[in-house]
Amino acid sequence: MAAYTSQDLFQLEAEEIFRKEWICVGRDEQVREIGDWFTTEIAGEPIVITRDEDNEVRALSSICRHRYMSIANGAGNSRRLTCPYHRWSYSLDGSLRGAPLMDEPVNSDGGSCKLPSFALESWLGFIFVNLAEDPAPLAPKLEGAEATLAPYGIKDWRILISFDEVWAGNWKLALETALEGYHLDGLHAGEIAEMLPSKGAKFIEATKQWSCFRLDVNFESAFGEPAKPFAKAMGGTDATSSPTVSIHPHVNISCTPASSTWLTFMPLEPGRTRVQGAYLVPAAEYERIHQAEGELEMTQQVLAQLNREDSSAMVDLQRNAGSRFAEPGLLNEREEALVHFYRYLADRLISVEGPAQ
Image (spheres, rainbow, N blue to C red):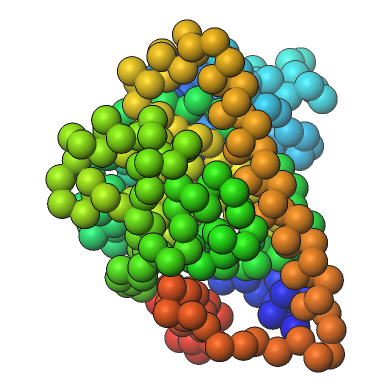
């Protein structure tokens, strides 16, 4: 199917979605201290996220204003970012601070030479960046999603384990799996499915910007037992089931009372997707797990297995999507979020008046 293999569609998605929408790039925790920074990429644009000397978190282009070299890679803590090519250096607000053997350069309009900056919002501890000029604020679009996740307090949760992998499949295939719980009995048969069985998956709601489904939690299962004390402190449906919130176009936040798995799906090519994210836990759990012998390693193994199972499915789905006999089938009621995602894609890609706000 061309939806997963077309290079032209891939380029259209990059231009009309990823270069115009709010894109999740990380967590506040990654730039906790003044001088902290980390790099990322959105639709081919290299970005550096910094916490500058005024304690403001910024999103800047990481391309040197001299000859296009990257001024930063990876993550670190420093007061300046220095291009390794000709040693031009910039403060963490993007201002040029040094250009060896030159008078201080200025832009063609006479202004000081500075790295381009982009809109940035922090939402529940997640950092979102928008490459568009003067985009509409993100937070008002996510009020319902924020209310759904509010009982978990994930704004202050810590990163226990980080993910950064490349999966051999289209970004939409990866996200579609994350949009529903119908696949758990199949791809994740065993202890995961015992804790979160497919039959307990329920679609809850959707807006133009996000959707939510819930999974009934079996707290008597091996993986469900540790979450039981946390569940007792929750109220209403949160005491018996856990939400998964997907924020268009590429963010998935899946919660249990004691943890949250956050994933982002960043397209690299029609058949390659960068999958980044983390396993988040409350601060007290973060300390307990690090002190408990073997628990961190066991959690890492479980999460690695989950990612392997999902990523291996992408290989098969991507290959078969190129078949002339591949046609979409009927959806289960537990997969309703996919319909809303397809509508979102249509709104962004088909509208002749520009992307929906």
